[in-house]
Amino acid sequence: MSLELTGAILGIGVLAALGAYFVGIAAVYERLSAAQRRAHLGWFLLGLSLAGLGFIPSPLLLGPAYRFTVNMAQFVLLTGLVAPLLLMGLPGPFFDPLTRSGPGKSVGFHLTRPIPAYLIANLVFFAWHTPILFELSSRNVGLWALKQFLFLSAAMLAWWPVLSPTPVWPRLSDPGQVLYLFFLAMPTTLLGALFTFPDTRIYNPTALGFEVCAPSSLEDQRLAGLFMWVPGAMIYLGALTMVFFRWFGREEA
View (cartoon, rainbow, N blue to C red):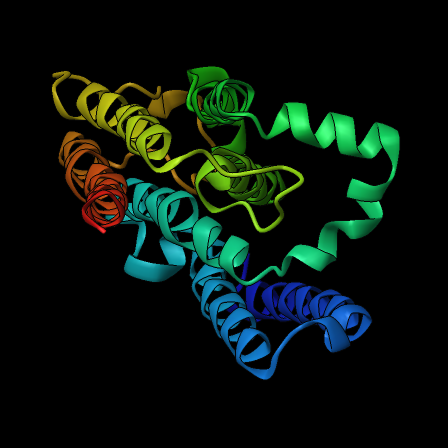
């Protein structure tokens, strides 16, 4: 995929997301204070800007030699930073059409509970890292882009028990968030270890044609694993620390 075509597709995606966001904001504009509108818009624009980096095919960023490392960095970016930023950018009234109806309210409530959200998100994460799906996505840019989109969507679901914008599908209590974030850090740690320690490449390079994201070398695989293991886990542990001190502060007060 050429840089020009990638830029065009990214541009269309960003414009579509912005258009949908502004339509939603217009519908609930009067229900938000000026400070709320600025805050939500700021978080959403920051998340959307970073999301663009997660949808640029890996070889176009640092070249083919480190495509797997870049792809894992994109995974950490989309799941650990973009997803919570986009959630923080969505005001609660956005979800009123869903939370008012019986089926939508019930389905949303059950999906966003911590255990279903955690299991569904990690099923998506680990399924796409199995050799068969990962190698397929490495040969096809469209399938790779779908994988990135599903990672982002699953991560937004995973972050919901911590950052829910609506009380109808509520957040966990502070102690619950601390425990949940601890477990949320485990998948990136596990995946990072799986990529760091083996002496051979996990994904079969002979099975790949045009390689979007498969490791170009054992060094590329190990570097990617270290990136997922350390910075990936630190995002969740940093969020855990902030929630813990917020909880501690409330207890002291």
